[in-house]
Image (cartoon, rainbow, N blue to C red; front, side):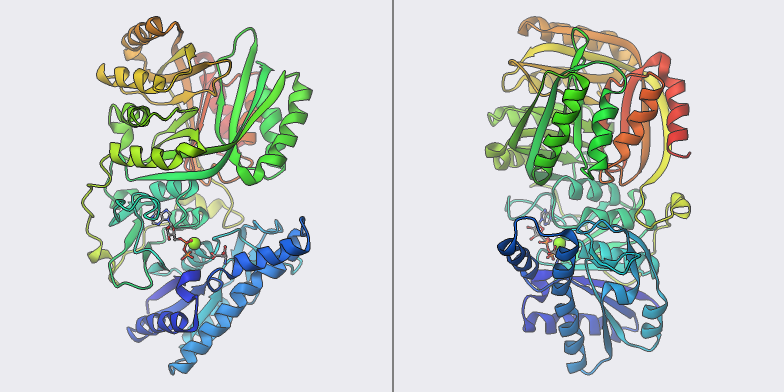
Amino acid sequence: MGLVVQKFGGTSVADPQKILAAARKAIARHDEGKQVVVVVSAMGHQTDILVDLAKAITDRPSAREMDMLLSTGEQVSVALFAMAIHSLGRKAVSLTGAQIGIRTDSKHTRARIRSISTDHVRKLLSDSAIVIAAGFQGIDQDGNITTLGRGGSDTTAVALAAVLDAEVCEIYTDVDGVYTTDPRLLPEARRLGSISYDEMLELASLGAGVMHSRSIEFAKKFGVKVLVRSSFKDVPGTVILSAEESTPRPASGVALARDEARITLENVPDQPGSSHALFSRLAASGIAVDMIVQNVGQGGQADISFTVPSDDLDEALEVSRTVAAALGASGVSHDAAIAKVSVVGVGMEREEGVAGRMFSALSAAGINVRMITTSEIKISALVDKSDAQAAVHAVHRAFALEAESVDGAADVAGTTLAKSSPLEVVQRLEGMEDLAIEDCHLDSSQALVTFIDLPDTPGVAAAVFEEVGRAGLVVDMIVQSHPRDGRAEISFTVPAGDRERAAAVARRIAASRGARVAEVPHVAKLSITGVGIRSHAGVADRLFRPLADEGINIDLVSTSEVRLNVIVAAEHGEKSLRVLRKAFGL
Ligand code: ADP
Ligand code: ASP
Ligand code: MG
């Protein structure tokens, strides 16, 4: 008998009528002959109300007690949901995370799932009950209640779908699918019929709030098909599935992270180990960093910049100041009011001119780009918070996302979905949510070109990459450092065979702007692939330490949820590959 997991978000169970309507959806599936597990969030804004209550008592509530408090929201809604099903004449049993046996680590308010026992749920299901599971919560090894982080009910749902081998995990919410960008932000956004795990993972982790990004980690690792659809409208929705089954597009969506902060350690002695010192301390504090940028460095000194969510700024600054002093850096600067705009698409690596298109659009809208990093499937740019909305608009238009025809989802909304296979690495994991590293490989075919002392004026990245695109050059990694004293640095890699052409173009641009160009004919690019690379705080640390121990300096870094790339000197390529494979247990 097929099994279906359905998840209802806060708005979908905001009042008794909505709970009854949701209960009817669960019953309809049950009547089709499916076993049904329902995961429910707290009603409406209940979790926010509980957070405010805690804040009214103290500025610094204990994380353990926060979990005790927040988990009550879901306990209310599961009980009411079960009662709703009873009132409609069917069997249902509600269960808390602990009653199901959702075991987590002990990191209160951001716990990760280690294991889920299925015996109890299976027994209830085979007794033809509909099981109503509380989202967002679990229990640690000492019996403490934990929560998975805001928005975590999606993760409960997909994790349950994974262990119960569900044919589909249906996410019922207040939008009718995954859009090219948040439709509340940009009404012209379009619904996508399908999207790949990698793209959804990237979009969710870069700010698209429609799915908890960790739920997509589960989906990809365990091959769970996820269907996002409306609680209120009967329309097909969006299916999230493996790359092989989805359509590659140069751009699938634009994500905005509004509350970001940038930190820069200035004039750090440029030697192996500096990055490690910094990122290991940040990891130990549980802070996940993004957009790590180190400029090429002059006079033996370099700046290291990175971004963190605004909520982590104070703690990250404290750590940064301590590390800066220990390393002999000249100071730490930061910017608390910035936003990160990202465009995501699995097809972008095969297309030239993608970066140029994005930066030209931002430049035409008069928006200054403060920092840039890219990976194979996304480009992220840091902009002033006041420019955030305009930036999303400009980038969305630049990729004609408002015009994209909605690809058919109707056929996949049915009940005949084939499960994707779990990734091989899953068998080697101790905890279900552990970081999953699949592979590490070396690419020695690229050259590195760097602009030094580029005047930091709006449109400089656009000018560079428009011209690079016009020359037919396909660039791989792009990094723009945080500008200092009115000067920025932009680095990019190209196939080594294109180096001379790229350098000629670069010199022409540099000459007209009073900048200089440095080139390295051969560099080594190491790529680590897997799932959860950015969201697991310690990955950068595990990367930097072994390289620092071997005295290998890192020239460029780029991170995404599914890949981490570093550029080192060509002569260190093979050795770096060996130490990294060892460090990641490959
Ligand atoms: P729930 O309570 O059901 O979990 P959420 O509020 O967490 O619902 O997520 C749904 C919201 O996500 C939508 O109302 C929408 O504003 C927002 N959102 C952000 N990015 C996107 C996107 N790319 N596609 C659809 N919705 C998005
Ligand atoms: N109720 C929790 C929250 O508001 C979990 C969730 O809704 O996913 O964050
Ligand atoms: Mg949500």
